[in-house]
Image 1 (cartoon, rainbow, N blue to C red):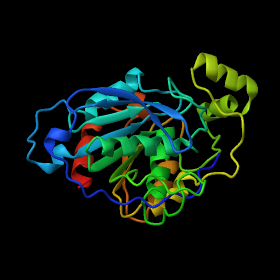
Image 2: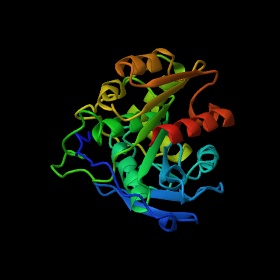
Image 3: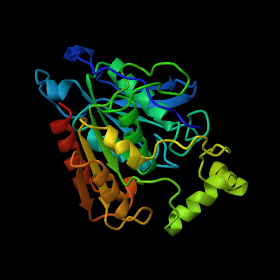
Length: 296
C-alpha cells in the first residue's frame, strides 16, 4: 500500500488574475496518480474581499477529513463553510469514502488523493494552497507535505517510478488531532478502529454501517509515519492542533510531533476532544487567520 518517496514539486510562481478565480461552486471527480476517482467540491470564498490584494485572491484551502467522513458529511461542510470566509475551499472524499472509488488504506495511499485535490486547486488558479487535515486526514497532510516538496521529500510520488504532480505541493500545513505513530491501540476508540480495519467482520461493519470501504491487505511496506514526516516539512509553515481531552490520541502524540519539528512547528493545545466534531467555530477562525498569515 505504500506510496513510496514522492516527486519534487516546484513552488507555483503564477499570480492569477482575479477574473480567473471561480465564483460559483463546482463538483467533479478527480483522478489520482494510481487511477482512483475522488469526489471533490470547490466552494468559492463567501466574503467580499479586495481583489487587488494578493492574499485574498490566490489562496485556497484544501480540507482532508477524518476516517469515515466524506465531502457531504455535516461536520466536513461546517469546516468548509468556516474557511470559505477566508478563501475558496476544496473538499473531497478520501478513497473508500462516500462516492469516491477504491478502498481506504487508512492513511497510506490517501496522500495521492490529497495531491490530486491540491493540484486541482492550483489548476483553478490558486497559487497558494493551505492543507488542513483532521485525525486520519491530519496524518495525511503531514505525510503529503513531507513527500511533496518538504525539506527532504524527493523521489516518486506513488512509488511507480513516475514523478509526482508538479503542482501538488502545499504552502502551509495544519494538522488537527493527528496520531504521531502507527498501530496505536492505547485507547478504547483506537482498539475499536483496529478491529474495524484488521478483521473481516470489522470491514463488513465499516462497509455497510459506516459506508467506508477498507482495503483488506496489510501495509507492505509500512508507510512513513507522521512523526517521521514532520522533520521533512520545513521550511513549509506547520501548525499542530490537538485537544487536551482527545479520546483517541492522548497529548503525547502532538508533543511528539512538535518535538520532531525541532522548533519549526507551532503547537496549539486546545480545550476540546477529537477532530472535526470537537473543533469550535472560534478555533476554526483562528486557524483561518493563521493560514492566511503563514501561506504567503
